[in-house]
Length: 351
Image (cartoon, rainbow, N blue to C red):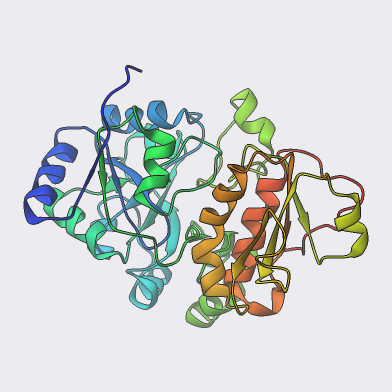
């Protein structure tokens, strides 16, 4: 791909109309959502969606999430069950993705050839403005090189995709900071969470009035050998990874710290007493708030990754903090899968 100039555009009325026109003619635009920044293309244009895969260097068997304004637009892409309508009324717009039986209007490239499609309605006002002005559903995976830390600011997008895409819409930092909950709803009698997010299994279960199962991760060999793709993006065991080897620890102990490399970076969940006195010490939240930790997660990982450390040790989120803690730990577990953790580290919490 030839290197091009990448511009970050303010959300003026003129710029929004300009970017909507760019999307309608089959080009790419990085847009803000409440979860992370997405690399958007017209979801009904197969050639436009192919550009997403090329820009991200994403394997063709990792499907895309399609963003819509509402359940009516979703119905043009998928078979909408009564369960899907209930969930949309409760959680859309918001960070919930539904995997549903697809309609023929959705190009194969979007679904990696599967007979289902992942759909959500974003909450971010600029994402909704762009959807409205474009008049089309938008495929929009995270706006970063495939497998790397997700972007939650325009600067993150430019750092990863600068020279590969022309336009980034500046919507400021993302409010949630981790990707959406993904629910497999192809069989509405057997719903299952494929990826945890801000919306919990318990919340979904209360709306559907039935149990909700947990799905399983996809082996990294799937992406490597081109086997049948996942149902939705973000399900690979290896994902969201910094370039520096990452070790996930359940809690800090003298042994963990003593055995770590001298130039190790330490990321605490809650601001530690040593903050400001020790080099390469970071934290996700000042007072233990899961929402703040989720918002800061990817920015702090990127900061530690730039520190020229030989290893990053990061503390898992306390499971008692609920859905966002589960989402944080899911992302960290996948990020740490890139390299085997040393024997001294403790495993992250399950789920």
